Image (tube, rainbow, N blue to C red; front, side, top):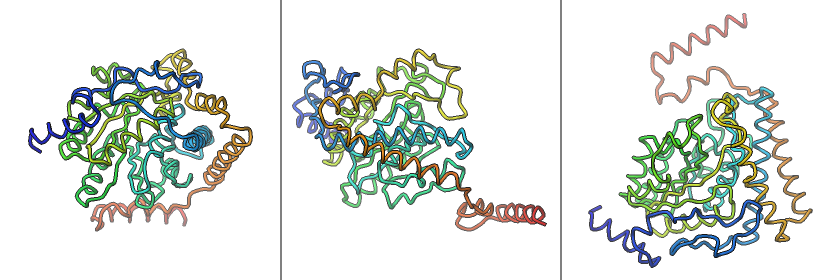
Length: 387
């Protein structure tokens, strides 16, 4: 794309919103936030909105569906943490406290759109429609991701840091070449924004004007490294400007604001306005994984501060006050969450019947000599054990 074409694109988008190109790309001065910590709706005068950054409220039905997914996500996080302690799951990176981000990421997409999650985005994958046991298969130590990505338009949960962003950009590029209206949401954490793959993904997406939403869950820590030691940028959303795309900051524990911001971003991408970067400010309430001791790098007082900002209790308070969350509705949501938790318990309590020889399948299209030798060596060892 020529310099003139790039400037024309940015100019046309900014004119659409009646603002300058600089204002379109720069995040709003105030982080987008619609619900106060106590669940009350912020007054319009308090929202700190600027031209081009106004967001309509989701409908009551949309909010109830989102809250149901949020409550299920919290129950699944708690259940999986218990399964790890029981030795039924090898590892689990809990997203307790980040569930609102993941619910919004999945619900903003249409069926034909694609989601590219990280290893921590189990709630997003569940909300996309993947069966609970299929989502958790990899965490019990099996070699495959557990579900068919093409069946759900949901990529495998990526353990390698940031590689999923490049894959998401590739899918968006292919869709654009085919003339499809597919939008991709590529998720990552704050630590991922320091990786080279992050730079390459954003640069390619911007140059080729691809319909990708880069959704950064800023949970303040890359394992034990705080954000202050990762980046000197004013915010992670400001990184978008350097690539010629718009960036926005949103309260990642405000489900209502997340839904509004993400749906606007998806609409803009689908209309051909190119990629956008959304930074959601949230917090990882529990350790990085069950192998991590978070008390070594953060104070309990910091965790307690974020407990007061819990996305589940905040949304519950709003819906209850609005008269939408009746006792009957809450009972149905709780029943659904418990049923899913039971499926996970029952499934994980059954030993996986995975032949060790499967370790050597699907590594290469044609098995290498070395791989065949290793497979024969393992087969011989197992045969001697059985003899």
